[in-house]
Image (cartoon, rainbow, N blue to C red; front, side, top):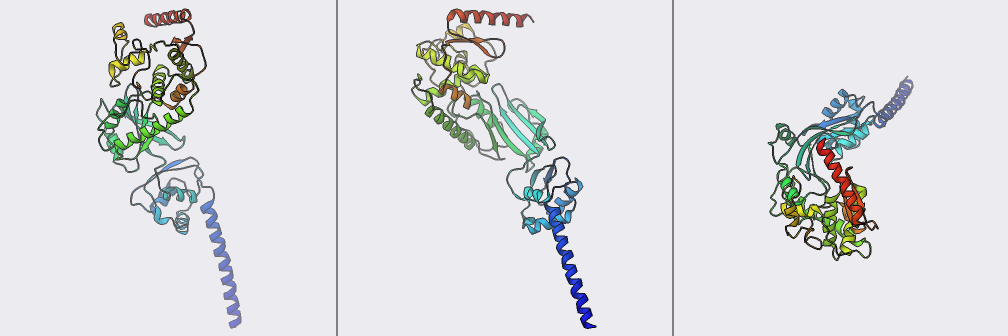
Length: 384
């Protein structure tokens, strides 16, 4: 009798162990396998939350099939206590294991709200954007000009949320004064801007920052990036350029940046100025004259007057026979590269062609024909 009881007990124990093992294997597969989510979602984890609350939210959004397996898997991976606050992108089909990794890894939020300060040539724009998890694209929620308008309430609300991300987007061709003023208007930054950085020495780029980041430190980061770009362009420059120093290359790059917005033209524009320098011709470029008037602290907003083209300033290249003494804006990488390695041409003239680009010429006669065409286009546009 006792043998029978012991035998039956042992059999039940073995069966139980097999069932338990099978259950564990099943749970592991559920934890690691592709999840049921048809489309990506943005999962927000509040500060002070826990895995139980997160698993309930995921179940409610159809991202996981079993909250208990989700929590047990997090415990087994020793990640249950590493939950981070923020907004996290959960892709379609994400496994429970992948979701646990996303909400415990740390670092910046991967979806949700982003405030972008765009420092452009004509204006500064503060933009509030939300990521659409299904498309992976940001959609604008609100925008305003922080230099001319009061901040909408929604911006202050979003700045109070801990998982809001911030970005400073600096356009190519802006002046250092414009950048400094733009950063002063960014309320999520801290610290003073005691002096405007040297013209041309800020790298146009998109900079991700954190709330409370120091303005002066950010400007220092921009300067370091531009110095690296300038050093690289100077070291790889073509032989025989009429440029004596990296600073002269930077000046030329800034003029190229302001003369054309067509990427394919930069090399040709650079060749015109290099050819003129080699032949002892004045550069005769309007953006330098404008800089002599505004010093980079305003947009002229009108055409140049004949009197301004004749007035001597250190930047008026219709009067001075060489490069101006400083850059006239902050050039981007492509303009630096064009200045360092211009196209090989015989062009010494260019004028707008009506398409957004320019018509180039080797002779004054050809240039005059191009100018006449441009005047016709201007007249037609005026009459229209």
